[in-house]
Amino acid sequence: MRRRAHIEEHENHERWLVSYADFITLLFAFFVVMYSLSTVNEGKYRVLSDSLVAAFRNVSINSHSEQLAPGARTPAAMPALPQLRARPVVTSMVTPADAREEERKRQVREKMREMARQIMEVLAPLVRQGKVSVTEGLKGITVEINASVLFPLGEAQLQPAAVKALRAVAEVVASAEFPITVEGHTDPTPIATAQFPSNWELSGARASSVVRLFIDAGVAPQRLTATGYGEQRPVASNDTPEGRARNRRVAILIEAQNPDDLRELPLKE
Image (tube, rainbow, N blue to C red; front, side):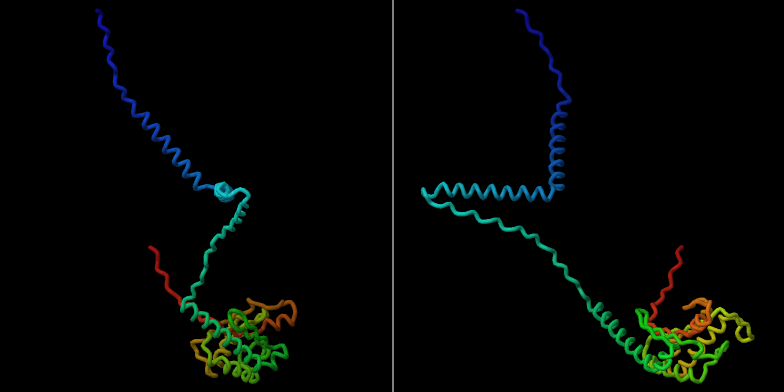
């Protein structure tokens, strides 16, 4: 009897690819499901949720109605309660430091308002003549005095009538702690004297005269600053005599806030 030929089966070394492909397919399906859950539309989700709730409510009602006696009334379904979304509670934390800062600002505003009222009272005659204007803003109080009231033309020596008015202003601000800047302004009319080679020197000297008077009246020197701007900051047109007269002025700025503490910046290497 003839023997069958023995066929040797070769071992398949690539069987692991089947398991690996199944694993990759499952992993891909898992990530697709996770992505779909993360990007679900809120409106569609709410519709699906309401539909499921209504369906299960009907099922429960039908199963209960099958146990009722013949002729009994089916209890009415309870209306679905509206779904309320909790709103985040936003609480503003006010620290003691913030409260102190707000109180300090309030006191500063009250002091500035009272100071402006007193300055208006002592300079009332000049205010009515249009020689003085007093304004109050976020930065503080500004008192602008026409130079014709304070100085002779082309000079920086205060007139006797001006000394009395400025001393009254100095007495109002002497008891406060606010910094004060005195600015001198001129019109563009050239000046070239031995004492004042240009309007820069004239405006600076006029501001310094007011500062010296304030110091003599009791204002602390460290609160005072004198500066001259010449004709560089006009408030009216210099094309008319009236405009040039308005530009010849001294401005007294009473600052509402103390200057910022300066810190030297390190040199970057």
